[in-house]
Image (cartoon, rainbow, N blue to C red; front, side, top):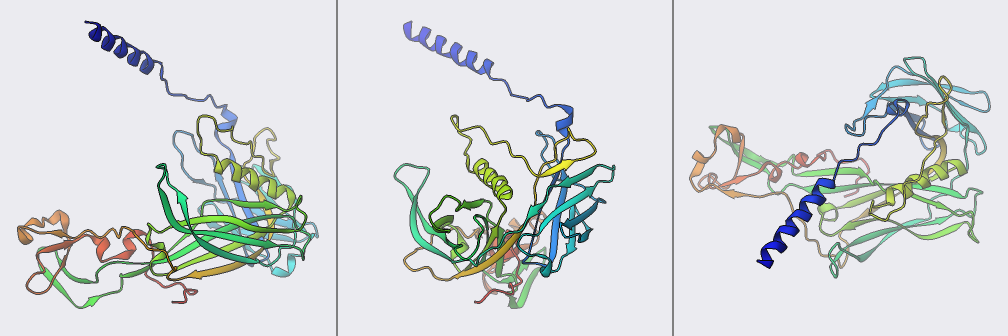
Length: 385
């Protein structure tokens, strides 16, 4: 009897707690529902400069809302102007000769949107960037989500030596490219009729994929004894992926920033690093350098900056003392009843075998076509292997 009462009270408590849970729907003022977002960094590394203009979307329906047909002009404090072309999808481009990028020169951007809204940025001043000192990796074990379990892989680091310049604020981007393979060439396939490809088609067996590492890396050397920094941690690549199997390349972009640009990017880094736990700090309010002259009360998100840029590329092949253990996405399956199992909804069906056994094993498309996983079968120009 007492046990029945205990179960009853426990059930009532569960129902009460569940009844108290309500979805939180923040009240957002009309002026905050739609904001312009303008982002762009022009640099001395490339003549083609880029800027992106979009509009914020609803919290419950996040999406990219590009703004096209804007009039966009970049100007410097020496009286030079550069008109940007609409490249579509919210992107704008222009050519600025590298001779225009002199340390101490400041740039700003003016934008007039299709509805006549006039947006302008503050001037941002170019500082000198040193060459990248070194980029390297170490084989390390990092703690997994399960206590006592570790993941092996390579941890990348970067050394900064800026003693030859006056800049003290830096940001880095990391772009990784890796080679990966399908397991089999295309030889047999079936769409109601058996097809035999002779010789086998190997064109989709080798692919390369490129990805911008989403983490933000920033450092200020302003309070250091020397304008140097040793072993800045970058990203970690696990041995449980195929990224290290056939060749891996890392491109590092090093930007020298103004103090205001550094503050903006460092706040972005802090917000992105927070994991959102129960006792985490509130996200920092990030104010950019864009201003709505037509409606000063309407906030414009984003930041326009100029940066000196230096790059370095690292290639890795066959990491010593690092066993790899990864999933290939290729899962052959037996056709126990032969080709009659292959209904038209599964056409084209890819098969493995020879003239006598081609009908025994079905290959999923990932087995024979590496592009299905998002990469390209066109070898990058910089690939050395």
